[in-house]
Image (cartoon, rainbow, N blue to C red; front, side, top):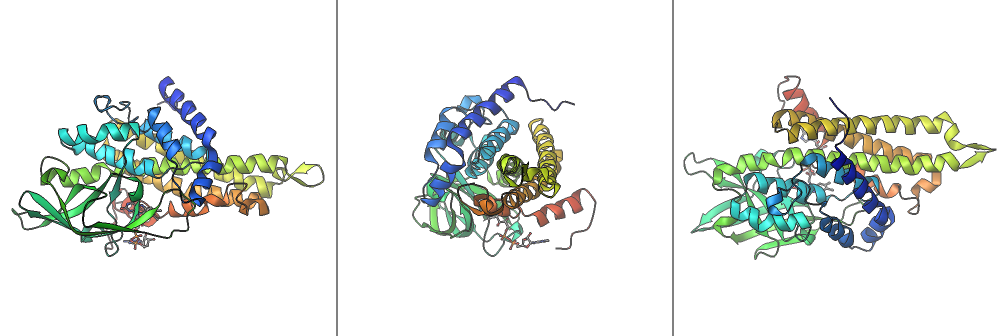
Length: 387
Ligand SMILES: Cc1cc2nc3c(=O)[nH]c(=O)nc-3n(C[C@H](O)[C@H](O)[C@H](O)COP(=O)(O)OP(=O)(O)OC[C@H]3O[C@@H](n4cnc5c(N)ncnc54)[C@H](O)[C@@H]3O)c2cc1C
């Protein structure tokens, strides 16, 4: 067992950290408040190869794994730039296409995802179904060689920045008459696809949307994979990378908040010559949060290692646990940091309260803490399902 990164992974970590620090949380917040995107940071990360670290080299990527992509997510977040679209485009969409797309889909889409010139977002959540994906109501029907898609999706991140959206729909399996899931690559400017922006209480340059699909016509080759049988495995292929990278983003955000707070409490003096950090009532909560973040990082490392070793089932358990741990640790770290800074904690200038909405959302999305606890209760503890 080793806890060391390889020299290449170490270099990647240092390089991404340097890039993130050049932009910093001030840039992230400025973009968010102006209603703009982090275009420059995304483009530079793409040019430097960081967005494609997990994409196979034959499609322009770095040929690494989710371990490398988790490093990118964590270090950018630790620099105050938690980019949710890293989880959606390189982690989910690129993995789904690399593992289950047709050769034509891989050649067409992966190079753009690798260099950052293209983004593909992911749409599974629906207003009626919520956490219960068995209730998905978006339906794809054959019409000649084409597919016609109808339905509604909600909270879909980054649709305004992406060329395509990977839509999860149900199709009818003519052999069984059952509706089974399939994934479709739908251009974001397709006729019949409309969107409306949701007002979210999160300071973020990335937006969430309601999507309406009204007779959206896509050609046969928009279906991900060679046949309808690819649907379920393709859908599951995105889950582990999603959980591991979102956990890494949470751990990075937690590190960022604790670092900001520790710098402040080590120098702020309000009782004579002693720093406020010398008071255990201030220092212990920060130390406790630092322990929680470090524990989450260990679980992320375990999950990523298992995933990259092809041990998907074990990675599923570890990835869910890592996501749970990191979601809780990030929320604790940011809240604790705000408290440690006192009034300064609530200012935009000190850059911690700006993360409260994001870390709170991290306990709900992309999978809620309750659904992870359900997963652990059923798959690890052998409990019956109540739902
Ligand atoms: C910032 C943000 C970005 C998002 N981006 C995307 C995206 O890009 N693409 C996408 O498809 N979706 C996205 N989502 C949606 C996200 O995945 C869902 O919000 C999440 O899966 C929860 O679904 P829901 O909101 O419908 O909650 P519900 O399913 O309505 O659940 C509400 C509450 O009930 C709890 N609950 C539900 N069922 C159970 C149960 N059986 N046992 C115990 N508790 C239960 C939940 O944990 C939750 O606390 C995003 C959400 C947010 C907040």
